[in-house]
Length: 166
Image 1 (cartoon, one colour):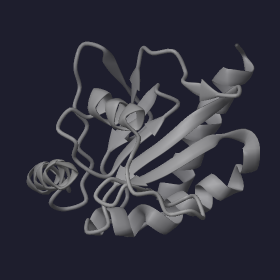
Image 2 (cartoon, helix red, strand yellow):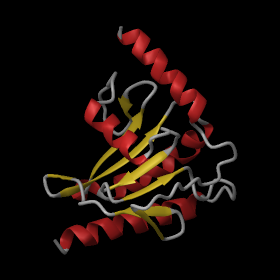
Image 3 (cartoon, one colour):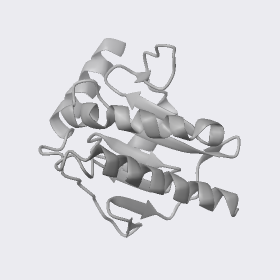
């Protein structure tokens, strides 16, 4: 049964995933408003663990856009130390790439967050504090990892500032 579920999930991701050219796809609805150059804001409370905002990226091991942003995301996350809680889920393998241990399944609660913010489950998907999200990479087409890192830091700094004002 687990194998069937895994294969079905993988098929869905394969069919509806990676953006074709690295361009950002931002889907808007009545609950969202544009923030910055590529993140969308949602009228949600900030999700936290231990008073720290949760930063998430959902990706797969086979997606070239995910591979492009992977080291940049990891570098940015490491720069925040213990100010944040972060996950970099490889949903096809079930592993959080930010931990030493090898996980084999993304927790259901994390997959629920992924589906809530990105019903089509395309990748990569970034969810910053359950308030800001982006589907795709903003600067891959220009191969500008520095700009990608700068924008990720700006949105994480924004959520940290909002947490400090609560």
